[in-house]
Length: 219
Image (cartoon, rainbow, N blue to C red; front, top):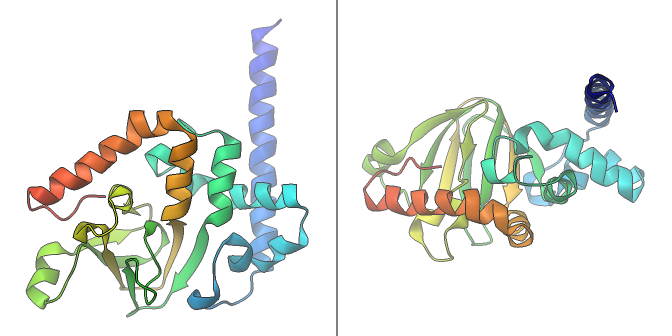
């Protein structure tokens, strides 16, 4: 077979996929309805129009909407996970908007959003791992996150009850984030042991050792 033709076909398929992704995102965003954080559980609630699509198109739509952001999380990227595996993660993600001044808490209690990974799509915020109970702690632990920053990729892997598994984000400007719930992360790593062995476990160890050394700015 001609390798030149094979490469062209591959590039054409990628180009067509990118065009489809752009059109799909434009359509879904144009149909997006206002929602409240407390009422949002997954992508179909972040973008209600997804519910009108077939099951297969729902899966593909969720993936196309967030694939570029999933690529920023090393062990959830195309390097380790197939499109099908990433689409299963995407279906459980949430795209959330927050106004300036809002504080987002990440923990296991019912009053918070829960544990997971935040990928910044738009805006700027202060972020901190662990418990922050005073202004001095805030000054020591907080750091700025902005577009493209991934918050909590290592800490989300820590066991229940580990104080460093908690976190908070204080929104400075209007902010849009992709939230990847912990259950989706753990399920993906359970299905794909290579992603865990070759990447995620090193993020886990980095989160532990960084906090033991007194640096709370691990991700």
